[in-house]
Every structure is written in structure tokens, then in C-alpha cells.
Length: 104
Image (cartoon, rainbow, N blue to C red):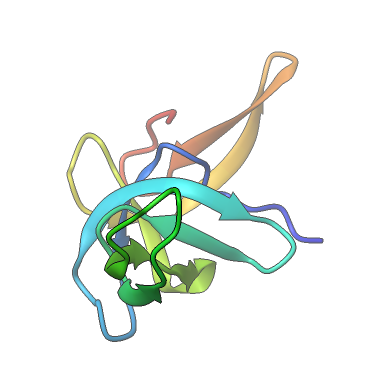
């Protein structure tokens, strides 16, 4: 399993695919499948039957997962997509932006 540099709560931009250019916050990361769910990106329609939870039923919009390789972290300083590196500071590993060299 590879070390993922995208974590829950990060602000990311889609860099490839149908939703290229869209931005959002990472809601969940699936390490086994190398996929993430990004808020407001890759919305799909799911048809639901009426049930006790949703008595109306109908069409529900929800986010689908997107491949980790298709998203890039947004640098908080420059507000542009950047690559992420990992370095050791003291006795802790920290993530840093490769554009601004700032700790994330």
C-alpha cells in the first residue's frame, strides 16, 4: 500500500477527467482503492424506493469517489495546485507544499 498524501479535510482541485478544474473539500479517503470523495465533485443520481427513512423516495444526488491521481492539493499560500512532499522535522513527519515550501 502506498503512502497517500491527501487527507480528509484537505482542499483539493481536480486536475483530470470530466470535472477538471472543480475544487472542494475531501470528505473521505479510501486507502485500499486509492480513491477519495470530494464535496460537490463527481455528483451522481441515485434512484431510491420509498422507505421508512425516506417516505417520498425519488432521485437523490450524492458524491461518487474520484481517483487520487486525478486530484491535487491546493497550496494555502498561493491558492494553486501543488505537489506534496513529506519531510522529518524533529521527530515528526510533516507534509509540505513543493511550490511554497510551507508546512501543511
